[in-house]
Amino acid sequence: ATPTIQPIAKEIEQIAKTTTLTQLIREKAAKGFSPSSLSNYIRNPIDFYKQNLLNINEVMQVEETLAPNTFGTIVHDSLEELYTPLVGTTLTKESLNDIRKNVTTSVARNFEKTYKEGNISSGKNYISFHVILKYIQTFIDAEITAIKDHSIKIIALEQSLSVPLEIAGLDFPITLKGKLDRVDEFDGVTRIIDYKTGKVERRNVELMDWDVLTEDYQFSKAFQLLCYGLMFFKMHPADNLTIQAGIISLKNFADGTLLFAQKETARGPKNHLITNEVISDFEQLLGQLITEICNADIPFTEKEV
Image (tube, rainbow, N blue to C red; front, side, top):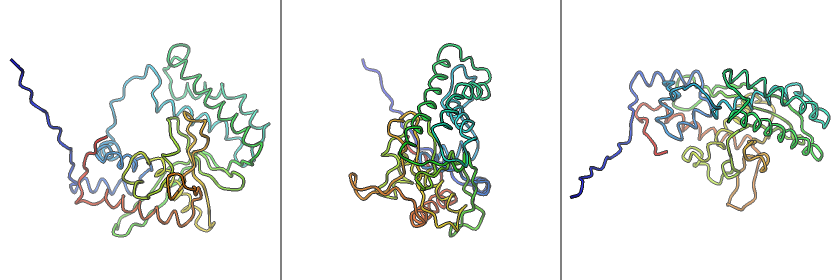
């Protein structure tokens, strides 16, 4: 005797864009699409619909151990607090050693602020606390090493940007908004730096084909860097800028700053510079993506994640 097995076919979820939903999308567009919300759409339109339009997130549970997003907040806030006194200055060994002395105090303060009920005296939280200390101390040590051969000047930290977008065929306000973790000058070249506490690899920010940006989620970090670059260019329209944009992955710190790059072949030379031409090409691609999101005839269709 054998049991009868009924295969369960998983249906792909689809959400039609009703008049009410279309209005919700327009309200979101006016308030502002963030690079991470657009990346969420690329990953899975249903997640974008639930999380970014309806604001339905996973059920929040009481944290007994540090969640990844809380971990990231503590790292970001600590780096901002430590480096704020250095904004507008060129980094020196003395100034970096001064802020290095305050790492433990700063992390402890931000731990308590972000994770009020957390006990960091034992267990996984104790380990997390010391991992964050190690991340930030290693970060500052790397900067001390870098300034032996390079000049680094801090321009801004945690800079909020919000810029209007004009997209052909869409007759309602559209805004792109985000926050730049750090803007600096590295040997005279302006760089936009995004801190990531998760692992990011160089292949995630290097492009051979533009189309993958809005099709393949593994290039979401490159997509986000170009969003930041677009906002920065629009905030400085008369400056005739050439910039670089990169990610510092604290979990993959040995690889250094992972700069956005274009290349013709897998092993070919890399162009790290982001110019007006690069931004113009990306803006067209971004316009197509936002047009798709706003198109009432294209339902939100689930992707296999």
